[in-house]
Amino acid sequence: MAKALGKERRQYVVFQIDQQEFGVDIHKVSIIEKYMNITRVPTTPAYIKGVVNLRGEIIPVMDLRIKFGLPSKEPDDDTRIIMLKFNDITLGVIVDSVAEVVDFTEEELESVTSITNDRTLDYVVGIGRIGQRLITVLNIEKLITELTERE
Image (cartoon, rainbow, N blue to C red; front, side):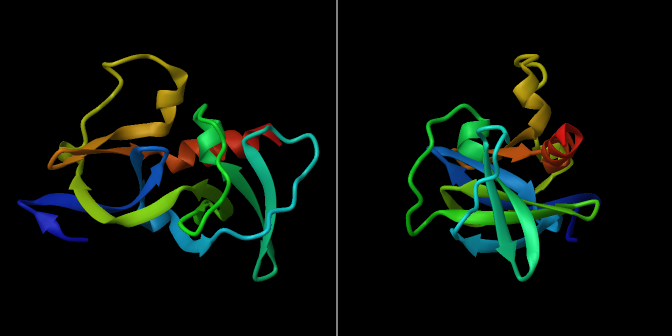
């Protein structure tokens, strides 16, 4: 990892959902796949689209649009499934598109806890700024942990 003035810089994969940009720690991303056939699993929450078979591994897939209360959208050529890995658990998340990799120091991420005590912000590490762009950095561990505790 690059050091900037003694501060650790972390890299984040930036993706879009609706008109908003989000980032996840690049070390939690195992692979980014084009949208593929998803098999629906009965009695799962609406935001769990189902499972995919990726090289023999069955992986649950979450639609972040639905999880974040946005209307679902038909997949298109830009739609991607980001495979995230944490504590030997792999989870796919459907995003509208993947943009780039950026890096921030912890100091460059602004906290959002002062804005609201909304529970959905448990998933937010902070907000990073690149010029006029604001990138919401997500806490993938929190998303995955909540999912595995439901089962």
